[in-house]
Length: 100
Length: 196
Image (cartoon, rainbow over all chains, first blue to last red; front, side):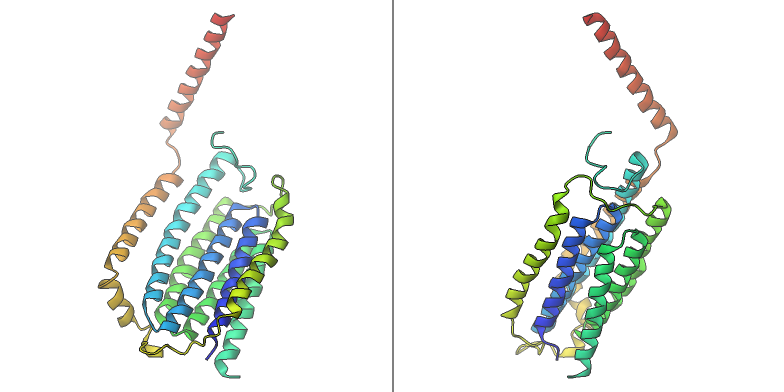
């Protein structure tokens, strides 16, 4: 069997890459995709622990995380569309005021 | 080295390379393609962890629905290849590499002490039947029915909220707002005149 630590290490690497992406990307859609990457890294950890304990709860948790991610993507992309309508830009540095 | 080790290494390498592709590309459509590759290889890794149902959901929900939504929005907004140049918060760029190394070192230090195999612990459900649909459904509709229902309410709220956020404003609404703004400006001008 593949050791659990391999899965945890991969999950950590993917999560870290996601964090760095949030720091270096300025396009709001790319930023959003980096957040999705982090969510998936955590899902991998949860599934690996679920396998270790032989308990299905971890997989249920991942299922709920997926539902939340879908909701988050829908609302977030709607916000991005509204932002683009009002500011004509996707650069997050341009969108630092609540009021135009 | 077993076959499953080779599978793991192959898909892990694919996922890491594609993840770097996500964060280094300037054009969001290439980032989206990278993310799709990451999600697919993670689905394959879920299969090696005997989570068949979740692997299928990963493909259907993530790559099938969420990523299509992303690509749809990227194309709808017709984003040009923008510079990822950081105008404000310049220090973030220089913070990124040290933070990457620090976070990675920290997590690896923790992982190094985890010396467990994925052999199920004593009394655990046996491998392949763990992620079967029956098991998941049993948990979801008995002990965890409240989170399940809460998720459905959340998705309903997301549907209504995203429609409300992304709709085009009605013409009369825009006119009403403009009228209110001009009235406000006139009042301000009048007050200034009075003050003068």
